[in-house]
Amino acid sequence: MTRAELVRAIKDKKSFLCVGLDTDITKIPEHLLDDEDPIFSFNKAIVEATADLCVAYKPNIAFYECYGVKGWQSLQKTWEILPKDCFSIADAKRGDIGNTSAMYAQAFFDEQVSGLGFDSITIAPYMGQDSVTPFLDIPNKWAIVLALTSNAGSKDFQNFSDASGEQLFESVLQKVGEWGTVDNTMFVVGATRGDAFLQVRKHAPDHFLLVPGVGAQGGSLQDVCQYGMNADCGLLVNSTRGIIYASKGRDFAERARAEALILQQEMEAELLKAGII
Amino acid sequence: MTRAELVRAIKDKKSFLCVGLDTDITKIPEHLLDDEDPIFSFNKAIVEATADLCVAYKPNIAFYECYGVKGWQSLQKTWEILPKDCFSIADAKRGDIGNTSAMYAQAFFDEQVSGLGFDSITIAPYMGQDSVTPFLDIPNKWAIVLALTSNAGSKDFQNFSDASGEQLFESVLQKVGEWGTVDNTMFVVGATRGDAFLQVRKHAPDHFLLVPGVGAQGGSLQDVCQYGMNADCGLLVNSTRGIIYASKGRDFAERARAEALILQQEMEAELLKAGII
Image 1 (cartoon, each protein chain N blue to C red):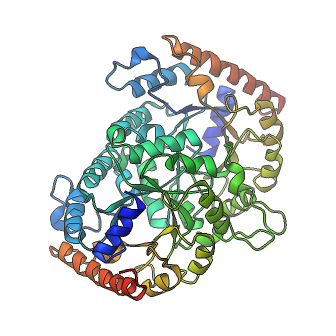
Image 2: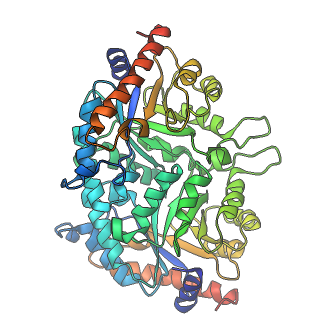
Image 3: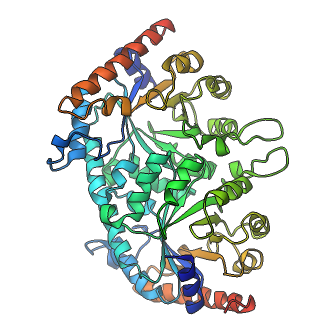
């Protein structure tokens, strides 16, 4: 999916919501557990209930990989039912030396070989340029590189500062920004640090940002928009637990839709306020 | 596998060789391509030819994942034939927020659930403490954390220096060293920077180090041993291309053994010189 198509989807749907599919067998409704593939059944119902309210889906690959071969079957089936007008994100946090990153790109981008054809993949930048660029070499595919994450441990290394006061995540924004373009690169920036978006936007004013941490992790959508939005919106705000685990009953999909609708309406208000729609 | 068992294996086999299984279908002998699972056939022959000469095997997960479900089947079958007296490393470079890292730990450590029961996994530290500790909570399993890698891009962020001159990789060695112990944590340190081992050993004198980059990538085994060996050896030196792709003919396993034997003999000499055997 191109940047223009993504921006079009945001304007059409009046939403920049990404739904996380961190599907945990211990948290899904019991009545699904007798299905042949409960994880896929759950995902299918969630996707059908939310497809018109969001612009992206983000399966967290760990939640599939943890079941080995069977989990990869669930992942492939899930990828196949993701709506083609939604941006698809393999949340995989991969990154290795060049020839290995090229294999990971094949794993998540090359449907003919791997069975998966995601639009994008999340990348850990620790190994540097040759670990990132193989993901940028493929037309209409995106690398979403970790910059400033929303977890407790994010402070351990991402805030490491050089003599001039520049922090590691700023160096990541600058260098990765030079390796790619705003048409093939995004950054992960956690919502739990609203005003950090000011700093991020200094280095990456035009990039799209993938923003986890709204909702269950405590981030504020208003703060994210105030400090992080740009002329093209420039945000994909992810919500997982607040939507997919809104209910553990037979009404789980309906309740997921209701929660997604609340977020979509808040997003619509923010897009109007910013004059984007 | 415990540290004591690993040290015992090194002394018994007079080797600290790790064989990388980055098995690329375009590089394996043509006569295997008609097999039902050529990648597994290749790995099985390589393992049978080298098992008495090495103490560890390291499948590079990208090379399996790139074939999707089928690749994970090859990986699982490969894991099943790894000799139980060898240390097994899932070279996966994973790392995510706490609950997701716990799922990755299940993926590679919990045979009952995922079908894979590796002894260890390689970890990218960018996301900090909660991304690493879930791998340390499981008895007799190891996290092998990226510190100073051997690729061109390693300089982009790993040498980022703070006001005191401390580099990011040194901060990783220090902090990760506090989160884990020498019994459940190793570090990846590339062989292409021989004298960097002096700096690494200042922060991690007792840890085992996983050392890629000897051979095809240009690192010297003698330098690695001179600067990196400790009283327990403390090194697992990986070779991949030099061994597994020594020949593309029907003699590939025999030639792989011959190359592994050369390295094992050099390692025996180093172990003797250091008084470890």
